[in-house]
Image 1 (cartoon, rainbow, N blue to C red):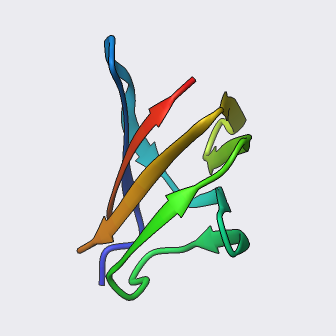
Image 2: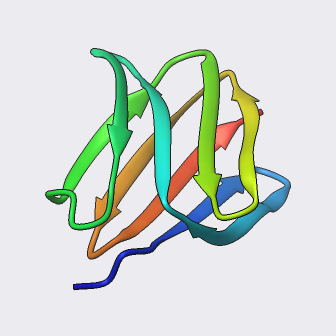
Length: 82
């Protein structure tokens, strides 16, 4: 079992971030949620809020205005307006 997530944050201007994470926290339209390795595949819309991710060196974040996320096979692809 892979214990890392790959996070890709895509914007209309290009790739804002691509890297590994241990956990990702997303502002989902039905409420905030956390993604850990081996999460079930889902697609969700995002609302304005803070997208945060944690890795071995600490926590990082970016504010999103709106967007969507797809989670599949430990890859989190976020398409968002920042």
